[in-house]
Structures are given as structure tokens and as C-alpha cells.
Image (cartoon, rainbow, N blue to C red; front, side):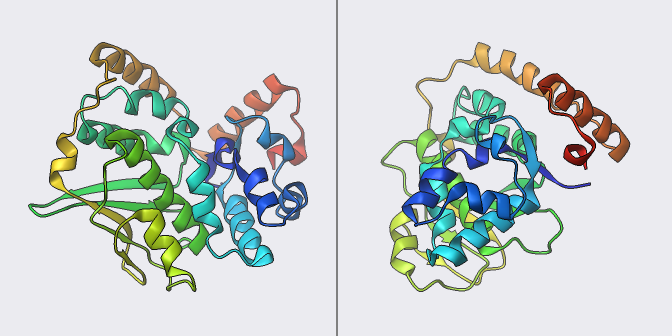
Length: 252
């Protein structure tokens, strides 16, 4: 069964596509993504179709950094219920641990691995979903979004040590250096951001531990999802019936 992602990931697609000279609705129809996903942020859509949309948009427009432009307009709030628990943690380290634990609620195929060391903490993004390695635009959008989240958590004065991307170097490397505000290594073994160990200790003034504890229980309840494909079909049918748009074609 397809790996799914919340349609909130496409929140800013129309404006990015239009700025690149594309017709967003035509591009979405081309990869068979439902147009109503632009209006319903919690709708589950195929990550494979989203990947096709990003790659096709970059190729058709000639905008090689399309995925980063999508990430640039994203925000922590796009993660829905996951964002609620992440932003109430006491420190950046706690927030990253919460993000790593619950990110699959937003994106079933995404994993965040945190590898601490004396000199640097490596935050590795892994994208699953039918491919051994994610396409360039998906890698860019995922790592760019992680950078945006870190900036929101740690403050505007925060800077990463390095950014690593698995794809080949683009023509406009400067755009990537300016975006991540650090050295960017292309052709790496993984998609990752390296940060200082001290960054994990940064406190978040807006954090409220009691609210964080309550939200964690609520998010854990959301996390109880069926694993077998037939159970997932049943869940999808119930969701679509509630919205009044259930059909054999839509479920398929």
C-alpha cells in the first residue's frame, strides 16, 4: 500500500508553482493528486505522487531549487499535531527527540535519526517509499524543512555547522549555501544537518511542560494506527465516508 503524507505539505505549492511560471492545478492533475488536498491539510495523499509533482515542477520550470523554495515557505505549523508537542518542549534537544518520535504521523515514510558526538550532532533525514534514495527535490524539501524548524526552535541567531545532500551538485550552489547559511556537501552518503552539541541545550522560552505532557498523550493516541493493509483500507473508507467523497476510484 502507498506511503502517505498529510496534504499540508502542499500548502504553499500553488504560490511557488505560479512564481516559477507553472499552472499548479494542471501540474497536480498531471500526477493525479486530488485538487481538494489544497483545501484539506489533514487529507492523506500518496508520497509517490508528491515526489513526482516536485520533480516535474522543477524540470518543467527549470527551477532547480524548487524543493528548497517549497521548504522556505513552510513552517512548523505545517506538521499539524506533531508541531503542537514539539514547540512546547523545554529545550531544542527535547524538541528534536519529540520530532524524531512522532514525525511519521505527518509523513509515514520519513525518519529523523539523531547521532550525537563530542564535536557535532548529526540529524539524518531518511525518506522511504518505494525508492532506495529519494529524488533530489524531495531531499531538498525535507532537509530545507528541517532547517526551517530548527531556526524556529533555536532562534534567528542559530546557524548549522554543515548541510549534507545525497544528490549531485546543482548549477546554483550559492542558493543552497545562502539557504542553509553554512557549507553544503553534495554527493553525501546521507541527507543531514550537523549542529553544535550546545544547540541541544538551548531553552525555548515559550515552553510549557504541563501542556507538553498533555499534548504528548493526545499525539500518542493519534499514533495508534492500523498496520495491515486491509485495516488501512477500512480506516481510509471511514475517513472518506465522513467527508462525503468515498468512491472505489478514490480508495484505490
